[in-house]
Length: 115
Length: 115
Image 1 (tube, each protein chain N blue to C red):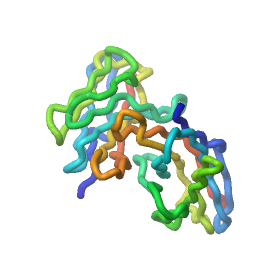
Image 2 (spheres, helix red, strand yellow):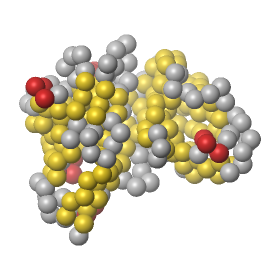
Image 3 (cartoon, rainbow over the protein chains, first blue to last red):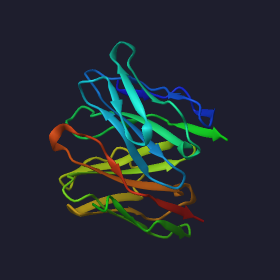
């Protein structure tokens, strides 16, 4: 079955520290992978996506993610976290069978940033 | 582009009343998704449309919920009668099926409170 697991529910880092958010997926073929960010009171915003090619993808706000097929992972990273990065982060995989644009979302990781 | 537009942004209603949430997808997108987000259950897909046709409504919780997409630029999610447990943030998202992109673009959400 297709699924997405974000093992960390909450993560706290200090401002300026590096960040890595984990995402593991189960998918029968080469997946399309996404990271979204949700700031308080806002909708989900696309940070980056992986379809094919270079397994290290760059996104907005200084984020990057690396696709590792052997580990079924797509972890999100940022070298230096800013206080404004405090938000909830969702990993998603798709498309699901049937040929439509349905995605499966992980449960999310809530990031807190200490000054 | 204005992005996905949802209205109202906030809705407070009494139990038993009818509630209608509205969504305007991004122009040119042909897939539309309705999600519900709560602290307890996270992000849930309620229903999605492709080319204005409902494809999968298995996530709709009860017969009290209904959704329509009369044309490519407008969709509604209706709850009748509303109950306190329907209190949540409801998101609409749109996507372009062709081109192999698959990413979904979310609106700002409607925060529904049923008293």
